[in-house]
Image 1 (cartoon, rainbow, N blue to C red):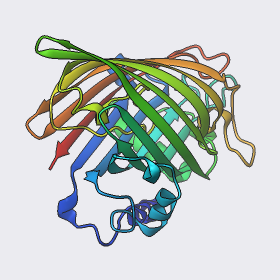
Image 2: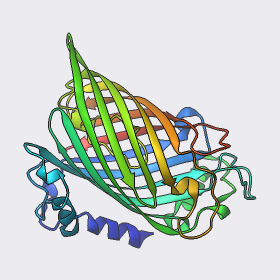
Image 3: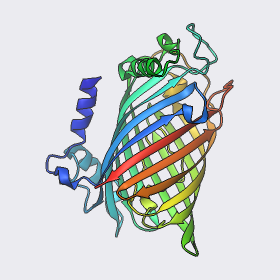
Length: 327
């Protein structure tokens, strides 16, 4: 696992980019304990860092292999745009809903862990934000999810989940995703503002393939300056957003997806493992607040989504906190 993390870190570092160019450094913690729940998507830990107002997407600002992909993308053809680059490394884990069973429960979701790196490129102005992202990761015992969850449960004095012997097997995973957001309506309300954000996205890979559309509503201050941090989609599973060091806002997002495959539900791609029947049409809603304290940004989100698989007897609900420092 350490070798895998080191490799992903090396892939993220262009040799010509100095340390003092770093614009933001953040940490995200996701957990179903925020809604007094346990089971299914249980925990996420992510570290992120990035660069804002990048002049171009080339070998001066990106690792050579990622610069090649960026130059071949439509982002560099967009006129009069600012660019941003962000990276994240983290671990996500999912347990069955019934944590007490050590035998395989056929109609319960599989135990699964993910250790992954994500690189995200953005081209944006005050009204439109385009993103391209690539996720590379590892699922299965090598992700270290069982070890982390057991240690956490030891610390908090809770009984460890009993079904990790039935987790999905080791597999390298990837996902390529594109997304576009529009800030298509805004209204000044005395000292504060209101806006609407629409979005479409699509992604494919053996980690997850889906298409979706969403709508976001924000109310707060300095919404234009904070457009880079906004979304019309739920903040989860490496949907990393960058924060601006100005203003604050409350938000509500609603979205709909068609999911073709999800390794956390379908199990392993190339060999047999435990799985359940994926529901392809899914809907979600998230709500929260973003606030700034000097150079610090705090992003708090609560998410609720419809069932992910047939026979699911507990909704997917969890909370997320992101703390970012802006240099």
